[in-house]
Length: 195
Image (cartoon, rainbow, N blue to C red; front, top):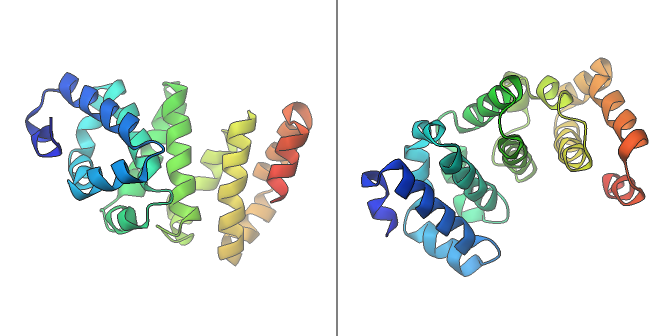
């Protein structure tokens, strides 16, 4: 199977293809570049609406998006200029929280958002229009998520005084992070959050 065949595959075949591609690219820049050259990201972005049909397809695609939004500069413009990509990720995150969907979707969506902001794929101001801070505040309840939320709000606060002031004024997300770290945080997590 090739990327060029993706659009004609049925949903199950797409899920299998995406699972294979994900396994190929994780940890391999060479494979990541090969799939990039074949147009994998553009193909997946063009079929973005179909993802909700199959949770396994969505998980695989979101895992691939995590890989390509982090340490793969060649792909950044594909995400930056894809109309409403970040809005769709936030919508997925909201829906996953509201409907108590697979926690892996929440974690992958958070990782994509972190990558979009930390790697300057989308500007910090976008966080305001997407209402990201209140959404993240609902997700501060385990070490992995605390770390992701802290990375996102740290980047946003460094880049935008308006967002920094909002975070300080609303204070709830900071209180949530501190409370969760006090209850559940390990020394390693506390140290990593200081970086």
